[in-house]
Amino acid sequence: METLKNFKLISLFLGGLLGGFGFLFVGLKSPKAIDELKTFENPISDIWEEENKISSHKVIRFTGRNGNYKFMGWSPHQDLIDDEVAIGETIKVWSDVGDNYWIWQIEKNGQVLLSYDEFLRSMKTNKYGGIAASIFAFIVSGVAAWALVNKQLRETGRLHTRHH
Image (cartoon, rainbow, N blue to C red):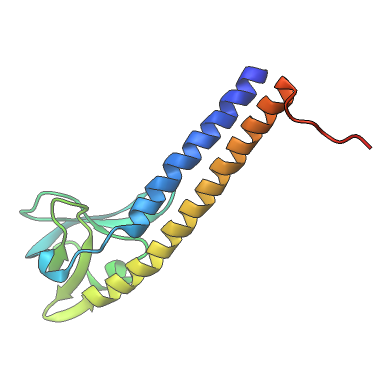
């Protein structure tokens, strides 16, 4: 039983460290400049919702293009995909093709539906959430480390507790 408890604390410590650095990396990652994005105009061949434990987002596949292009769940205008675009319609997209396949800007019939600037603002807001999550993960890791060290010190008699 004691081994299981130690294993849980070590797992919590390592998971907190790994999660903390992962969220910090995502939070501090610099966004792409608009001139680094690839632009293409193709018909939509499929649209679906993709979910994971953290978020959900729309995925769009285009005729003649490889890759699943993601309209991120924290992007502004979440109703845009349901209300403004449909399978078979042609839209112009700015994307980091070959990297994340995120959709950074959308244009349809010459009208901007989602601008790069709007996407960037929402990305920066989401970035603060990643940094906050990393701080929380580091705190969890610290508490687990403290519990392990405290337990070890008690077992070896190096930690003296006060008795009233």
